[in-house]
Image (tube, rainbow, N blue to C red; front, side, top):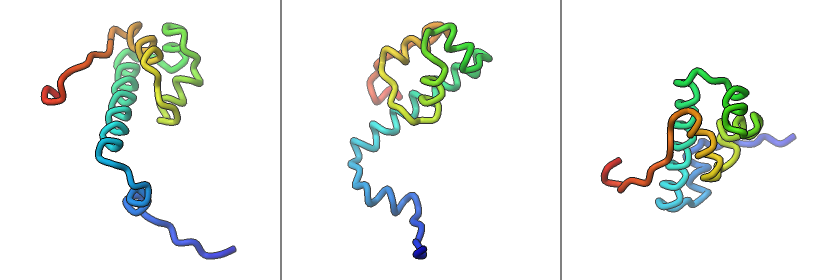
Length: 95
């Protein structure tokens, strides 16, 4: 077994050569997922309970909350609506 040198996240990220636009897209997606998780927790719902309310299968919710999948808009709407939330498009300068 050869001795491998582990690189830092910053070194790995640099190798990915992600553009500022791609980084902004990734951050926006992460923010949306985080807001969805926070909404579920504020509503004191388990993933299973949210699954029953939204019709989205619990494993799909789990993968979304682990940032393993990119959520589709219709999935987000189905998750958010029964919790009293929605998506809104706003100008960047208002964020």
